[in-house]
Length: 412
Picture (tube, rainbow, N blue to C red):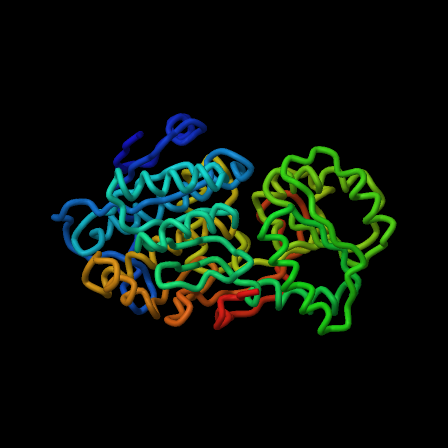
């Protein structure tokens, strides 16, 4: 385990040394940058000095594996939230001590790391995970253990439960509004291709229901295993089908490989996917990235004071000069945890869970609120057209605010 206390930001070389591949755990505790006040929607923090013992907050983040390209940005976003909270006095007079484990985008590894956090580190609250296979495996352990997991990433839905919270969007907050916009602006025949696991399959089930209701058609649907390096056969079938909209949900670095290879073919339809973010396009050349249509609760290009403040801090310290909805979701989750604990007046799990219900926060994406019934947050929804391979080349062309989570958490 590597332990560090924040007084000044780490330099790029030291940050990479401490948080790169091979790091087992990172512990953070101290300093806060700005205030966002309790229940009226600012941020967590008890004010005054820090006199109590540190409270250990666990984090499961993919620092290695298929999602490494976003893991570092998720880590930095989490650290920034902890620094802000601690600089404002901590939570209930206690600093947060962040204990990070690399879940490696591997369900078995993630469960072992969750066990380590709980059984060895004494953690009673965890933020993090990314891919659905990892999330589902971890929930199977944390739920019966009575340890809350605060998920930061969009997913296929269906995880309502007393100890599961989410700042990640449900299908009704991301897919459901995106499909009508695509049909209206780009056509009604879709080709769906995804990685062969629960997230693409569950997400496409929601997409197909919405598309069918609009009179649209799916002209192709297929799933590929992890680790594919040659997509030429799949791309050939896509070209033969001639869809109006190609909609890939291919996870992690495999998705980057797909977009690069597709650029070598003469595809004439619209390329769209809610999985394309700042972390993806920075790995593409500008010509390949340009024209992709995406949708998310958060983009770096959003113009509001909370996002300006977040990005000023983030870009000054992160070796990865991009952050997407996953990092923003973790930043939000840590702040909302702090707000809920202050509201409850305790870190004891069940009263804390009650304290989190209805908590609001002025997030970089806009004001969000934890729905008391589902424990998922409300969300903004934005459609962006990518104009290049940098974060400021996302042109936001449509926005909606305050979409509430589905009452059934998007259960299939």
